[in-house]
Image 1 (cartoon, chains in turn brown, blue):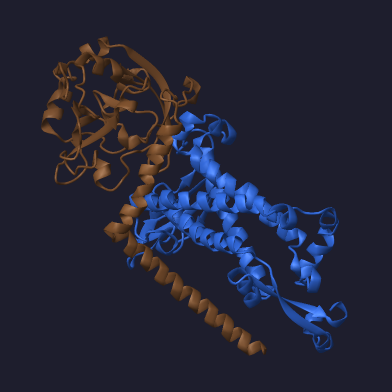
Image 2 (cartoon, chains in turn green, blue):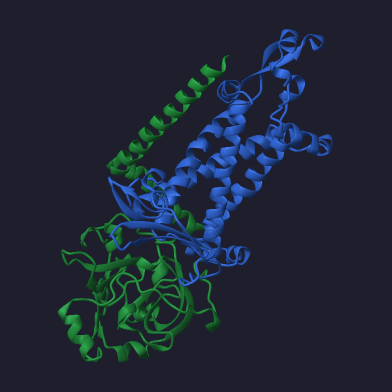
Length: 257
Length: 281
């Protein structure tokens, strides 16, 4: 084996590696666009949801922190101020005329003012908010237990999911933000409808007057600017049918990871 | 250099030995592919917020590492990587690189991510699917290696291995690799490197990955204690990934300098050619 042929061989190897690397990358991009492969990849979401549900004690709590752990700056993500005119009008009056509409598959539909929500059994928690992007912030929340509200409106046996309708929209077509959770999370003690953040009324940037906290899932599940809550058997017919604004863009419905 | 001297060559005969069992070869290649996919889809996920922190939350004012972009006075985009407060211009690779033909602000470049365009949702789908394949492959390998005694026979360093660390390291630095009988077994440096990868780095990647899941944190709060918070776990996950990249680079380098075709053959067909001196046969 001469020196020269070994260099040629190395050059050939390098080129072959680069060409095959580029081909593999292009292949991955093609696969990402194809429906069947996306479905194969998505099968992991079902597995993750089932496995995590299986090994989670129903009442397993998200970590709670102390006042000393609070983030000096809590990032406001998604919408910072809804453009919706109805919302703007309500905000101008300090949300005194805002009402949460609770309906769908319930025995007793209700419309609750902030005062009525504040009268429900509440919970204060200092928790970590994890964004799907990767960052975390720690904030203090006070809100009505969702379980208390649900017990009041009495879900019908057919109800499977709790859907949250919001005032804000993130896309140009004006589709409103929405989210959905199952009953495991809906009745979890840390699942609250927060009206206070860090001991103050919930600021507009963080979802005033009311936002959801689901502490064992990612931030995008925690709908801000709540307008109504709807109990449904299936979310197939709501907007994109995937159970949430980001879910309709391809993110996981089960955001426990 | 003894293996280039004609005199020694004439004295040597070679024969093929069966070196790697089928389950080892299979899991090796599946794992190689899966780790590349996990790395590249991981970089895609990292690009959604290209900064690392220590502790439970992200102190946005004091990241350990951040990869960002800024616009110069002339309107060009520059990639700036900040490590512990020190700034580096990394335009073209980190912070700002070509995305579909134009220089765009993005953490890692398009050739390093799956998919190549900025697409967090799809990156997550790849990552979490192949994480399962990785765990299944790893479990298969560990189970096989325990049952077949591959661990105890081939990987656990023996007493004489430990004593030979100094000599083996010196020989490696001189690119002198074992021949004959000796080449039938992993040397002590290989054993240590493989054990660290398998029992430190790979489990660390899994545990720090799990620690980033809010649901897993609720189930196993000790994950957060172990890594000093979710953001630290994310940082360790990143460091682990690049430690694995470093291992692979050294591994591939060693494969090349110690006989690329022979090594490749042994990991594909299982058969490895060793040279023997006449006296030994």
